[in-house]
Amino acid sequence: MTHAVNSITALHAGFSSSISLNDLRLMVNLGVTAQERDVKQEINVSFKFFFKKQPKACETDDIDDTVCYHKISDAVKGYCESGEFKLLEYMCNGLYKKIRADINREIKIWIRIEKCNPPIDGLLGSTSFEYTDIWE
Image (spheres, rainbow, N blue to C red):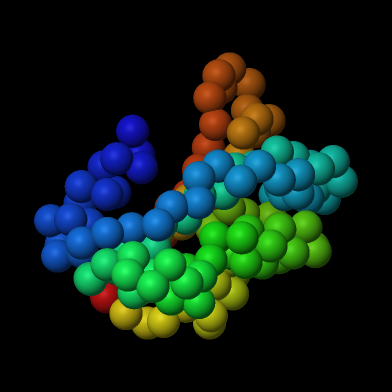
């Protein structure tokens, strides 16, 4: 449902289209304590890229005229698997900066990182952090 809410919100904000990368599953060293970071944990990373006008690729059928989600997934994997992180917030900010550097400023980004099985007694679901620059 999170993905649908963000698309609807973006449409109301004047964006005409989006490209999504949903639930890229990775194993990373993530956790507040060194002991928690010693064991890789499962995360899901999702992105949406919002366009004011539809990407030129809609007319050209050329990958260079849009956001290449394969390149994005490679960059995300490289960043997340290259080190260790204490907090989802820090990891998300680093990913945003890495991706933002390669994406046209007119394209807005939404990112969500979900820690699939956090070590919290009684928690049956996940934890997550989201960030967007859609309002900037």
